[in-house]
Length: 334
Image 1 (cartoon, rainbow, N blue to C red):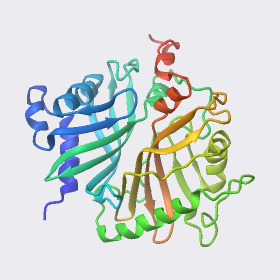
Image 2 (spheres, rainbow, N blue to C red):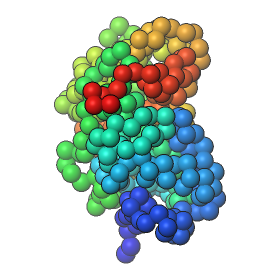
Image 3 (tube, helix red, strand yellow):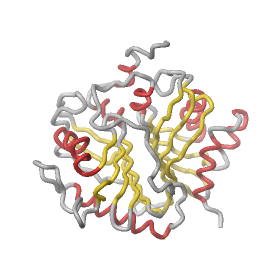
Image 4 (tube, one colour):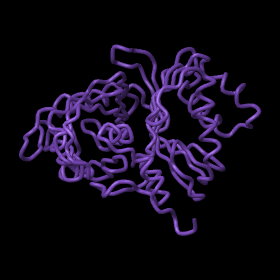
């Protein structure tokens, strides 16, 4: 039986590598003519195959020389949310020599790994809708123009799963179990102690997170391990800044093998009530686009990869980090 996941994964990789003269015809094989791509700021919504190629695919191909797509995970399943449909989810890197500007980021002429979280709705073998978050702030970091005053955790390249089995996982029937673990965790996250930032059911013998879980966050947050690290390097600062945050407004939740993924566009609503990443409280009502990807054991979450549209969030907080970074000093050879 043909694995539709492998077909879409192969198409997305080849879309970046085919000859430019063949791009339009090749794109038509798996991209619906009326497809819609919702991409992180500053790209935003692209309607129709022509706009997707002109404003997303071709800019990537032009900016990153010898461009390759390197999927750390690629899996899919039936969406359990009201929107329904078959969706595929991926954590990937766009890899190449950064030779021309991309989405407001100046080129460095050096090798970069542009991380991306992606969700694709597929109908009749063609992509009809996608939502994509590129970590452009991490791309700025790689070019020597990091626009933030610090990062809460460690800034690292996203690794693949410890088990190295995240691309088209084999044990598909296990997906419902994996998603069930994640949904139980999400249901308990809003109940927390404002002093310790602990939440019931999250940790301990019967907790939903493994004691040594690995948590990989976007630029500005960074990565960490264990519940104490999660609190110290993300949760405490986030909840102090946005104590009324409400999340879980997801258009998609899927499970596949040991993996699950959820996303909201936006997922969170909140008020900016405390300093965050060097920005004083503004009192503004904010929204946040979120993508989470999980690897589970039989009973717990072992790894979590997180993509957040922080360019959009910081814009709402009054900072245009792409414009600001354009004025920062460049690399020594420039």
